[in-house]
Length: 448
Image (cartoon, rainbow, N blue to C red; front, side):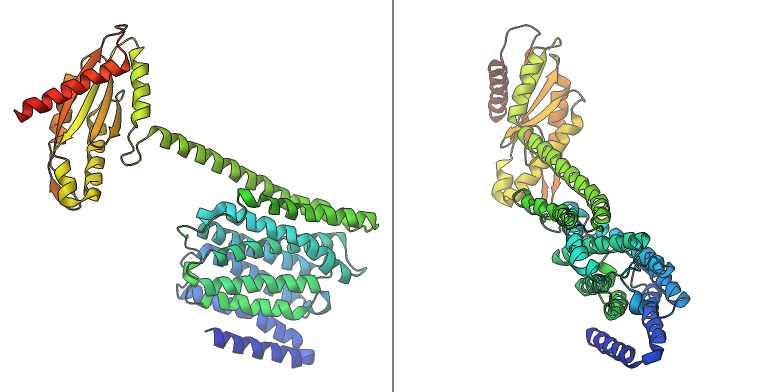
């Protein structure tokens, strides 16, 4: 497929070079080529997630309309910022391409939103140097304010798209050939706008024509499970600061030199970059909140079962001891758990502990607190001084057979209960010690 594309592209460009007065017809043929490949890919269901591709088709149709309305406009007018209707169609088509790319990127890199924002920011920040050192030198007196605005938005936006596409390619995963062609399309389009040369833009039409017919095209819009770490982590945010400083520094230099174009670049560049900066720092705040919630959960929950851990259970007992209703603790120690580990292994034992945790949560009341102290010991903290019915439900529930991945097992449980009346002066250690003694008495009685 790649060899056929290279041959077709070479032939098309050779024909364009030697066409002479017929160049506009060759341009029209090249512009229409992607429409044919996209129509084929959509008709043969090679692109199941069709929305981004339909937006790209819309952009191609707009470009074709512009080419039909003004044949040969690309030669001598591309990148000149003249503010013509053809430039409006070019910018409109790029807007549709940008929307389609954004949808595909958002879906594919949903697990790497921060890295995607980093890539877009770096790309947008590269737009300033491209504008100053690439576009401005070849601008003529025919440039209009509208044309400059359209061209600048194109240059900055495509720079951001290139950064995102590079990030997409770096995340690996299926569909790399299609991503490569899309990246080449963006780079070639940018080259054409910056230099004013027609040939790179025509090559861009050919590369985008190849994108939807690649074998992995249907997987480009499928989400990746994990796209890797953000490009700008905590230790690399300085790179973002450097990148964000480029455009203001270039603007300051231009103002010092008396260049009037600086007055346009500053607001446009800022308007394009600042929202992404704010969104990036919002993502940092969200990630920090998520990390804090994760740490808080880990500090109060058992890693294996998800129940409350020993620290939280002790706090719950202390709180209940100061309440008006009194407190009862049920210390639950599993019977026959060790043989499961010995016979089936620790993975089966862990699975059994998870089943026990789920059953305890199912039989306890809404106000009860269920936790794991460690090993095969569980604790239930209940408001009130009578939890005999709950203790019986726990015994009956945990005696039921458990269907583990290694087979069906049966265990039992010994429950030691201890209660404290409101204001009785019993502390946590005494209460737990009483429940522990009752639990061991129950085990001794069963053994006898």
